[in-house]
Image (tube, rainbow, N blue to C red; front, top):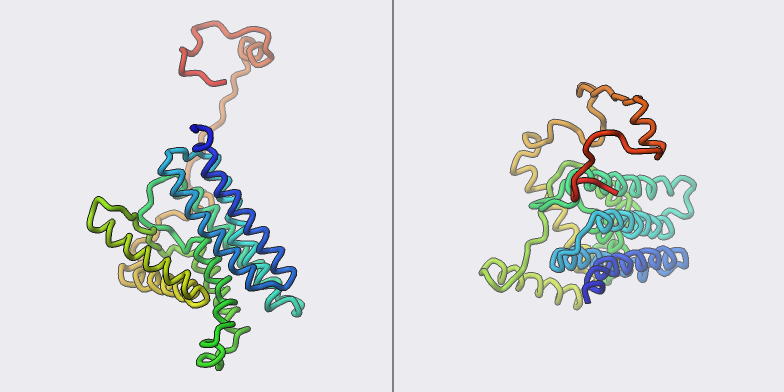
Length: 284
């Protein structure tokens, strides 16, 4: 039972990767609706693997690294390929827009690993890659609805997709803080209220998926931008950019111990004189 609990989060992560790859295959075959929904399913599994890891207390550095590698496939490459095969396959340089989106997703995940991975979070720095992937993928299903083709037929789809892709790429690498999904529960009134909201959102997603995911993505994007403007984003920017080295930081010189005893120790002939590490303090 313990082994099953330990591998359960990685099983959800593997399912996330499975649907991400399946989405790419569906995009290559021209099944854009299926490709979009596979990305949505991958995002649901990505949400569950973190929750399961926290509930079972089986989180690890390996799981965090695996999750990031899978996310770049499911929410970076898969939406970019959907975008390419749907709109930019005929153009000579349209694939560059897909590359820009993948690059932004990779930078966003790398920054997350440096700043926030493995820590308790009240917000995300930049738009999360799953939300970005869902929004970009669901733009296809939304443009196929009768409402868009009727009431919003005046909106040019190619220009809409280009602007949306650029916006999502910029927000992923931006400093805009986006809130973490609130916890649900039955112990407090706040947890119960958010439980009702989650249930209502799930019912809307199951009843009107073509409308819900794209509208929810745009709503979350707008909420983050308005909230950042209201709180004064420029006054809360970090003092140092974590994505570049600080040249002003003094570097400590590297000291090398070339004594005969140390050399014999590294060559495995005999240990250096003196007391060794105590039990529980050394490494293997």
